[in-house]
Length: 427
Image 1 (cartoon, one colour):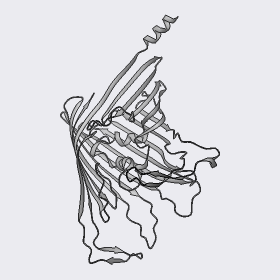
Image 2: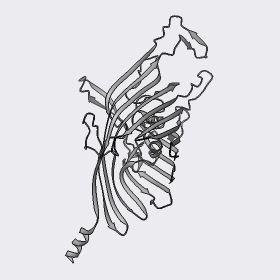
Image 3: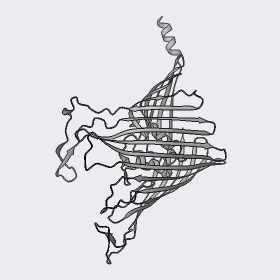
Image 4: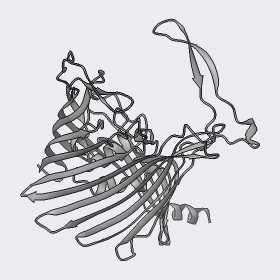
């Protein structure tokens, strides 16, 4: 009996694969701000006040040239494996680490790109761990640039990664591209082209019952190692829901057509005693169609930064911020190469209150044009080049990457340009 048991274990089919991408580029970025003042200001009643001594400051440009990584595909190193359990059942794991091959500073110290274990069969797949969110997939699948490099669409830039400058504060979304501590379910692949997934991410925060025992915000005094001075700092209260994510994506792919609808809700912050919960809710629809000579891409997206109040106050409420964006893109095969181009646009709705004495300011908006070329030297190695330009209006401050706009008083962010020239090798 022992011999038969050993033989049964040995007969199980399993495999482990080492894989990765090493992508390096020479990249340049520049962000230009302009002084749009002409010596005219407005008083509380809205009447113009002219200053004849005002001297326009012109413009200021902040630029940077780097040897970067992940301009075409994100650099990574990973391990994945599958064991056939018999009866159509399989167990799998996937551990994928980000690497910064330009300086070697980041290696296999964290599997922050993906770290999952799963069980799959005729019922579909149940996946546990850190993984892409359903609401992010449309931003990358239906972008000709795959949300990489200076060509990344503005829906992704504004809705997820805009942590430096810009309007709306969506950079506070902790679960834009990936979410930790998740349980995901994927439909089986034999549904005639229909596919889908749902995902729930635990916040893993402490919850007190009764809630009166929830720790309150406190003040602490700490030593600043740079100045040697004792400084006052606030210690945040326990956050009982921050980090939770729930989302789903459902689509249809058959032949040249691929279309998908996705929704995600991420709890970005909450304050127990204030009775507030902040969420970033994303709804997007994307599609692509391959005509052969060209492949077209499109996406529309709606993101809302929403604050829920347990008891709505009469004043001092934080207005919700809405972001509406769209993307149009195309890829054109040319011999061993591929031309890529996209146009994306976003507009913020800050929902600012309006009164006679304080007219409502125009909402920030931006658009972006990107074009690039990929030349495949082989199935695994490619040379690529991308150039992109962002135009900002009404206070938006989105960039192609690199440095933020100059924050000197009186300057308004205007344009951001950038380029990537690089080499990608996959294994």
